[in-house]
Length: 208
Image (cartoon, rainbow, N blue to C red; front, side, top):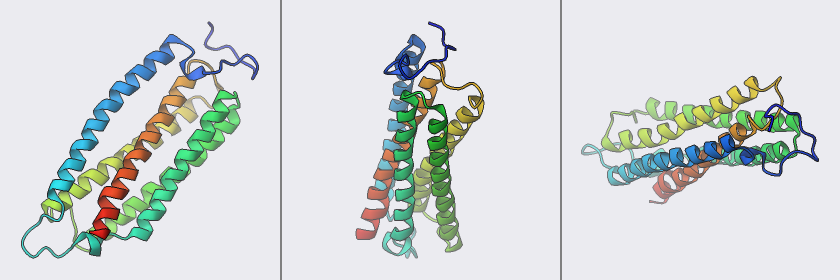
């Protein structure tokens, strides 16, 4: 099968992301990688819960005073919406509409960048208030967990951008379709992790 063959909507495989052996191998490698990522975040969540509100005597901040749910809610909506736009992108990929796929991926990147910008703003506000990485065991656990997720968001954005730029003139084929699809799965994983962070860190932190 020629990977560079230009397909029409009628001849394009129903599942281009796994139509070749290389595509299937990419899926296998991705799930193995995802298993390691899951263990990493599970460890960070466990550490955070163990150290929650643990700090020096007379610690100035509590989670109820520190966290701002309206800002975090906006961040959550941005990231969840970006997950939806990536679904639209993959829908157009399966219909061999390369321009529409690229457009929806661009929207996904913009939403993800907006989320990351707000997270950086959130961190800067905490630091300005004196809640720094070394302020307590709790602050270290918080910044490590949320910051690691932010790093994954940055990696996901870079992944999307690189794929879009490298394939802008090549179009879509059975060689790069699995790459786009795996990147979208990674983005969904990032979104799922954030839902847990929003619930465990912010929502439970404010409710107490």
